[in-house]
Length: 124
Image (cartoon, rainbow, N blue to C red; front, side):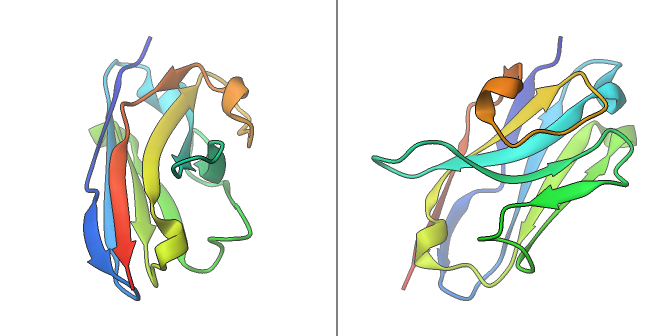
């Protein structure tokens, strides 16, 4: 099992940046594929980015490609989401998720473990 705790959310002006962190527990963190999802009020949870266990393979939603970057530091049991050029439509609660597999997925139901979420608010 792995427990996930997100941090780094906050209020930022449009065009600004934030870096989210997701700290995981457990000695086998490096064996988990990780992802970030987000959920805005009244909307379904949507995929943002994912990263394989080694960090070599990453995948992004079209809406964030070129603006967001996912990375991981397995020595620190942490996954990051660097968010640049933020826009009001990026406002949401951001969740990190984990699944014990080689592959990454874009559907929430494929992930077994979730953090509690961190709020990101982008004002215009």
